Length: 175
Image (cartoon, rainbow, N blue to C red; front, top):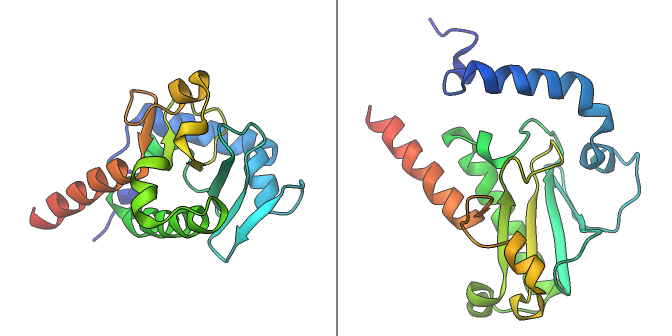
């Protein structure tokens, strides 16, 4: 018989308590949730049933938008687990398509000129998972290059995160 708390088994009690407090007191104040619910304005680039993408108000380069899951169930990338692989793959697919359209980068150019990724706590300030999609890299200032440094302790690229989650998924299946 499955335990009703099984989905929380891989989280520490401290993280669970933090998420409970944040969810109960901050959900209505969360600007990305408010945008997803159409309570606050944003320059929307893309929207479907699962995600909304909008221009970042603090652009790091010519093209800089955020992709946000509408459900807001995950606070930040550090809380993703193997169960989130499909969602992350879908976010990456949307991001690559939008970078192709908005920044006019081919798939080959995206490898070197686009950054797709997530800030990690404590740098992740908004308690709602969001992927930064930035291009071209060559137009980023030094502060932006530092803030969005790929696979640094404070910023993980979408591809690296996906690889880590897929490894956890494979390990979970083999057990």
